Amino acid sequence: DGGITQSPKYLFRKEGQNVTLSCEQNLNHDAMYWYRQDPGQGLRLIYYSQIVNDFQKGDIAEGYSVSREKKESFPLTVTSAQKNPTAFYLCASSLDSMRTEAFFGQGTRLTVV
Amino acid sequence: GESVGLHLPTLSVQEGDNSIINCAYSNSASDYFIWYKQESGKGPQFIIDIRSNMDKRQGQRVTVLLNKTVKHLSLQIAATQPGDSAVYFCAENYAGTASKLTFGTGTRLQVTL
Image (cartoon, rainbow over the protein chains, first blue to last red):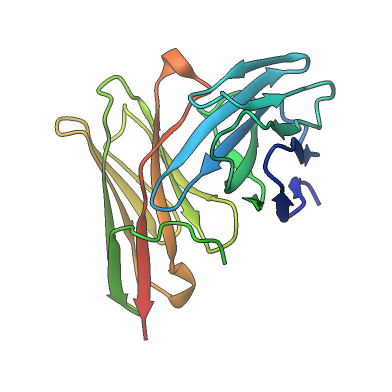
């Protein structure tokens, strides 16, 4: 089955630690995205990548980092510099841009303890 | 499930009735719009999209209406079913930022039996 997979579904982190969220897609999509979702708010763009080895900051990139070494994979690292990391993180992919249908993963719920 | 949209506006509809979910968008330059459905604890799922050269687009049991004059978008769901219960987001995009979708805050649809 083609799709986009995020892991883990739930993640707990101690304050001061970095943590990496996984996102893999087998849709052969060029573009991949990371969004953050907080209660009562819509999705906000953290980072996006339109092609391998290239990525751009979104609206709330501070405290996050990404890499795009392979077309299928777009991991997100939440660093200790992120002041309020507890949130629901969503990865998405699309053929080439957000002007076509994008497919979302099932999300990772990150909680700082 | 995830604590998505704790304080979202809520629309309650009886099973079998039609639902109308409204969305006001912000950017007059936006020319591409999408509706997503998000069930608790899951990632958003594409429902239907529309480009600004259209006023109306129909899918299976869903219709999207676009009024560019007042920057308003609506999603109509015919014969609402319990499985339609979810949070619905509209998102906008314009060609100048092809990779960036701006999401609304969402509306929770509750279908009563």
